[in-house]
Length: 162
Image (cartoon, rainbow, N blue to C red; front, side):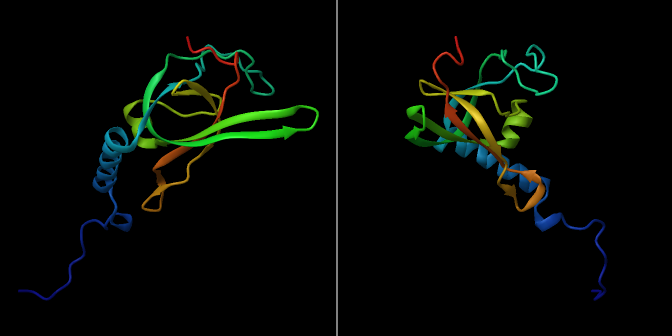
């Protein structure tokens, strides 16, 4: 038996979390979100090819949407909030935060979450107003785990899902 140290052929993966560990985390998250705690929403992505965006401002007055995609996600219902606006009066807003599993969306469903898209949760339509990518997998900057979308309830007539 030799007592000599030999250098390994390749260094260990960062933080001992390589592709196999990332795939295991994806599989476990998929099962938990889809079978245990997740809810189903209908996601309406904007059709980027058929929607005309203003050259200077990048906004679209008339948006064209693709058919809805069924997505499993974690939903945080934030309730109904009443606010008073000067010269407007009372205004009621309803909001949710949708936590998407990033790898499930991008790799399995070929879906990319964007501001301005709509989601149908229950009987209510919500518009995505802000996005955050807060959770890193094992602290690795190249491997983000979730996308959180802050959504507000869409006003009547803003979007027709039929």
